[in-house]
Image 1 (cartoon, rainbow, N blue to C red):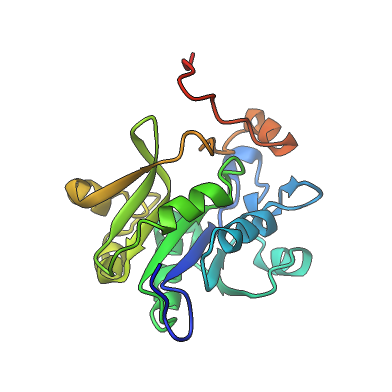
Image 2: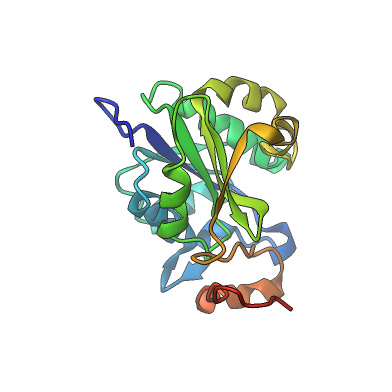
Length: 214
């Protein structure tokens, strides 16, 4: 992987601003995972996957998150407009990365504990140039994390509204996205509802190669 003099070519961006509306207003960043805030685990995954620097976007209960979570070594941005949806957090994160020296960024979501460093490293390794677009795939279906080359950041930020994030931009550039199969090392399950809190007991194991999903 190409390296910049100050940073790695590929930065990490963790979107962790949500207020957990469907979880009764429990901010996802503060959910406990392994005895620590989930945001801490997710930031560590990006670092272990080779991303540098790692930027974290907070929103709901940001002051409490900063007090409770060990985010040493991460750049933290607080999105005052987090209630507008994930798009505003993605914009805030990309703006914060503008002067980082990074040529691409791996974007991860705080509420997917089944995605670990192995998947991040695979997606980061897809970087070839600032024009690269890549995404983890699960049985051929695009998911997270995603890699956004720096040449795309301005256009993605301009189109990131509501909870869409980069979705609309990526749909328009589907043919340019390199899919990186990660179904053997990660499970992209989201924590959205109280039933999903079971994922905090430990991420599900990836299916065995050739296993049939039910």
